[in-house]
Amino acid sequence: MSKFATVKTNNGINRSIAELFRQMLEKQVIKAVLIPAKQPSSQMVMQTLITNPNALDTIDPFAPVSAVSSAKSAAALTNRSSGEPIAAVMRNCEIRAFIELVKLHQGSTDDLIVIGTDCLGRYENREFLKLAGEQKELTTAFLAQAAGDKRYEKVVGAEITTACKSCLYPIPKRADVNLCIVGAKPGEAIWLEAQSEKGEEALGALGLETTDEVPAGRQKAVDKLIADNSAFREKNLAAFAKKTENIDGLSAILSSCINCYNCRVACPVCYCRECVFVTDTFRHDGEQYLKWSEKRGKIKVPTDTVFYHLTRMIHMSTLCVGCGQCSSACPNDIPLSELFATVADRTQKRFEYLPGRDLQEGQPLATFHTDEFNDVTGQVK
Amino acid sequence: MDENAYEPTIIAFLCNWCTFTAADLAGTSRLTYPSNVKIVRMMCSGMVDPKYVLKSFLEGADGVLIGGCWPGDCHYINGNMKARRRVALLHEVLERFGVEKERLWLRWVAASEGNMFAETVKEMTEQLKKMGPPSTKQRAIA
Image 1 (spheres, each protein chain N blue to C red):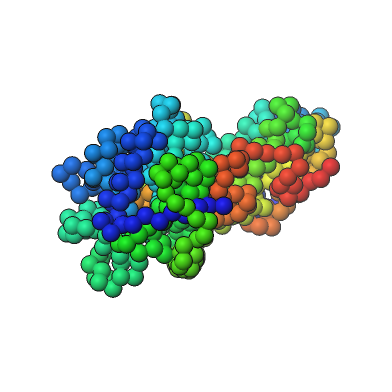
Image 2: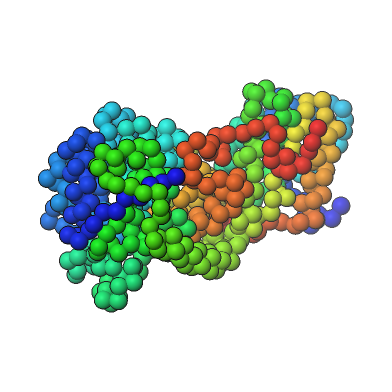
């Protein structure tokens, strides 16, 4: 059962949240906070590890940008933990990916307070930089527009990523504390939701009054957001799946792939410490290339492109959280997030697995039992 | 025999301890089975990396057969159960791109079941002949 507390934001949402973290730092509830913040002499907002309360004036946790999945940043901080308590502010896709990395022993929740944020989507980095250069208070305008404030309708002007428009899980459920803005008026007040015991303790340390009741209007707004995203997703993915229903279709959309592997570098759940595709296994002899070409008269170079993407689907599709970082990282605008989403839908259904749902739930390829999936062989002794 | 008749190629990854031994037994028992199958001996069905299966199809195989020990009989305790989950996963990924799951078989064949190995290969060859070549065979895929 989660608990809610109300935080007034009349002085600006960032200043109110900064005040919360200032108290947590000063009361030594945490030693540091990992939080999106504006970078010096730039409009860019990146995750920043803040230890000095006076440095909190640059934070911008609801900025509609995520240049790197924070799941990787949080994993880097906790994999070999300092032992000091840290808070990390993340979107739900990042929290879900982080939970998967913890299962893979590449991160840990032991010394971490996970602070979720309701997510209304992000812009591509290029778009964000352009818009942030044009508009001083981009985050305020973005949130007000999403909350239906007519004054901001024309102000913002770009579209969030396709992956974000298709997101079925914009609201964190497995954070310790969630910063809720959906259903709230972000210019007046937001809600803090404690989603775990650790979260309740944190709210207690801040001296906030809590209630068991879900704030008025929240559930309805959440349901609408998810329904809208779901409708977009269904339509968009059905069209994409049709286009790639055979190997020809798959080859066609991957024909501009340059084997840069940006998609797997950006992928928060691509877990191999060294990718097999950069090892000697794929450093072929000249003779090998000739053999491949002779077999069918021609072969595209670089080779192993379709093979690479299919292998990635085998490795990460059951863990794919649909964050869209693969699409954002692709220099040739290949619709990778749609590609992986349509595969992930199938593979996650097959294993009845939802990444990030539960830290205790074993990953599909790391658990197995004697009596299961008997339909694969169709043989029963 | 018609020289132009379609002859599917099956790549078989067989566990050393059971299905490969069964294939050997089929041979020593003078059982006949189609020569469409090309056998690769593995130490365990759990050693069949999904990449081997993907590569086989991308290189133009018509079908892939993985042979392992019956559940409970794995020489390495549970390699066959890992293989089973991987094949379930491969079925989903391959079918998404039009490679039918009937082209990838996982079968449990014990070392003593030479007869069953020959029957399995016959059955699979016949099924693939009915299905015709897969979409992956038509073009060079890189």
